[in-house]
Length: 93
Image (cartoon, rainbow, N blue to C red; front, side, top):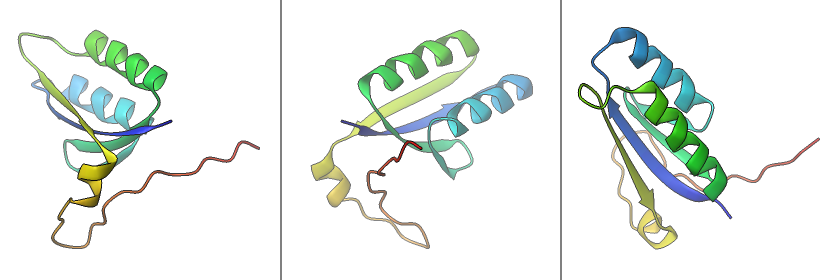
């Protein structure tokens, strides 16, 4: 079972900023410059948290992770050309 996580970050160093974006691109979709939506299993979530902690400097950078429940996702309001994300189906070949 996957849950939707909204991850935002504010990284002070340009090199770490690029690394954070690259890391999150492996787990989800960029919805704004420093905001990603990621459908993650519990193990993927724990792995990502570990990688984030290794990447950031706690006294300089900020990362926020919000878990969005199915009920809340249905109540989301978005203006503009974006859509409310739906859980993806994965096919392993």
